[in-house]
Amino acid sequence: LVMEKATAAVLELIESAEMRGYLKKAGDTLPLRVWLEAAAGAPAPLEKKLTVLERIVLAQTEPGARRLAEEYCRAAARALEALTRPQTPGTVFQLVQVSAAEDSNRMERDDVFLFTEWKAAQAFARAYLDELYEDEPPEEKARSWYWYELTLCRPEEGGMLRPGPYTYLLSAAGEAWLFMRERPDGKATPQPEEDFWWSGLSLNLPVPFRPGDILTVDCRPFAGPGRCLVLEVGDNRDCCCVQVLYPCPGGRADIGALKHGHCFCSGVVQILSPLYRVSRWTGQLPPEEVFLEPLSRKLHADPLLGPRLWTAIYRYELETDRLGGQSSSGIPVADLLALVP
Image 1 (cartoon, rainbow, N blue to C red):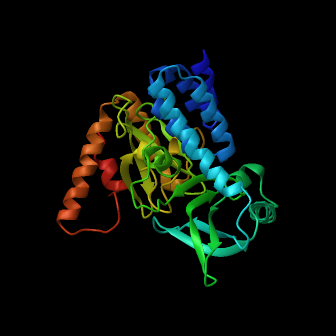
Image 2 (image 1 turned 30 degrees about the horizontal axis):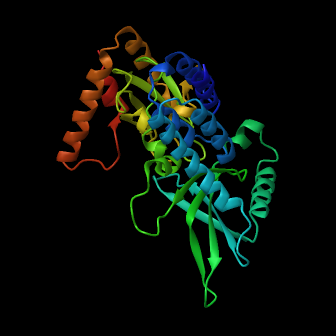
Image 3 (image 1 turned 90 degrees about the vertical axis):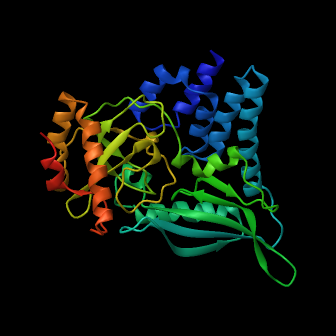
């Protein structure tokens, strides 16, 4: 019962009602590390994550499991303490506004702001967001198109400012969501700390979807929103088992593994896992995506069509590469539809 309450706390970090409902029933089969990774990489303040992780620690009765959960707790607590403690006089908080480039999968660093206090940096971020989204609905404000990177720079002899070991990723509202720590000894970063930045590339949760479902994927501010079509689900345990088809510019479509975030064509910086917000799409598709509807119906009727389509698209891309064809990813939609009986 204690562990059930702890996992329920993790589920509060998952915004998708469909994912929450499914994991509430299927979550008993998940290893502890998956719950820890889900907490570490969630789009939520570090303070809230630390509270959730502490509940997971209290729920562990096996020494090895407790030690693992404590490692995640300590990683979050150290990062928060480094950010919020009284700083050395002369410390500068460097806040860099970042966004995903629309036409490529790279970051664009824009304005740089300097502060002498953490709370001042937070207050600026919130005020700027309020001003920018003054006339927008709350849901748009909650999922903005930009984020911040924050580094603490401390003074050294000779008047030089040296960046500290931590880089924090802040939401547009100034909440510290994620962090990365550079080790001075050059050694590899321990897994728990890695998961507070990179778990968006590897979070492996089972999903409640089936072939033919059209999904909304929303990793804002790092990517999306967009839509994709489930081709196959496999055993629902492997990290690459959920394969999807997603629209690309220029009347094309491509394939990828949903759990790895391979469901966007461009304008993506893969930091946040799509599994936190993924849900079934029930609205009207824009004209460039209506080709998903007939494919959805056919896949619902014949789930085995999904692997056949995936294989055909994969072979098309291999052949195009071999012949030195288009640099555009994926397959033209007209050619894709010709593959469907």
